[in-house]
Amino acid sequence: MQDLIQERMPKHIAIICDGNGRWAKKRLQPRTMGHRKGGFNIRDIARSCNKLGIKYVDFFCFSTENWNRPEKEVNYLMTAPLKFIKRFKKDILNGETQIRLIGRRDRLPKDFLDLFDELTEKTKDHKGTVVSLCVDYGSYDEITTAVKNIAEEYKDGKISLDDINKDLITNHLFTKGYPELDLLIRTSGEYRISNFLLWQLGYAELYFTDVLWPDFDEKELIKAIKDYQSRDRRFGGIKDDNK
Ligand code: IPE
Ligand code: MG
Image 1: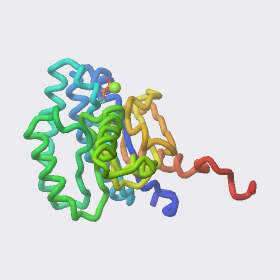
Image 2: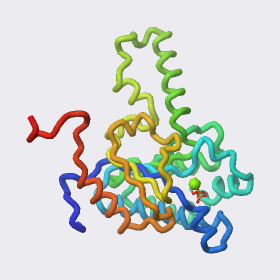
Image 3: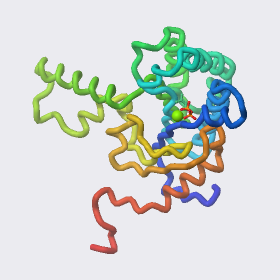
C-alpha cells in the first residue's frame, strides 16, 4: 500500500496533536473550532492507522499542564469529546479499533470516565488498532506514580531490589503491555516532547512536521511512515555490514 514496506511498518506510533489553536486563528475562528476540527482528525487518523495495519496509536489530547488554559477552553475540551463520541458511538462499536484512555483519572469528570470505560470494555475484543487517547496525561506524573507503586511493593515485601529493572518499570506505566514505541510524530512545527511518553521514547524515531494537526491527513501520515522506514535503527549497535 502506497509504497510502504510492509515488513517495516511501525507497530506503535504516538502523536502530539498540536496546532489546533493556530489553525483556527488563521481562519479568524475561535480556538475551540480548531479543537473541533482536531477531534474529527483524531477519528480520521485512527481509522487510517487501522487501515495501514498499525497495531497501536497514542494521541496526546490533553496534558497534565493543559488545565492552566482559560476555563472556557478547558470546559470545551472536557465536554466536546463526549458529544462527539456519543455521535460516533455506534460506528466505534461496530468498527475494528479498540479504545483506551491513558492518564490520571482523579481530575476528569465522571461522565467522561464512564463513557470511555464503557468504550474500552465494549471494544476490548476488536481486532484492529489499539487507539489510546492520552487525557490529563504527563510523563512526570506517570513515572512518579510508577515509582510510588514500586516502592509500595518493595515495602510490602512483594519484590526485592533486584527485581527492579527496565521491564518492571515499563510494566508500571499506563502503556503496560504495549509494544515499544517506534515513532513519535509532532505537528505544528514545535520541536519539543512536552512531557509525553518520556520513558517510552527511549529508542523511538522522532518526526516533526510544520503541518497543523487539523490538516494532518492520511497523506501526511504515510509521509511520516515513509520517513520512518528510511531510518537506520541501530538501537545503540552498529550496522551488520560494519561488523
Ligand atoms: C493542541 O492544539 C490541542 C491541545 C493541546 C488541547 P493547541 O491548542 O496547543 O494549538 P496551538 O498550539 O495553540 O496552535
Ligand atoms: Mg499547542
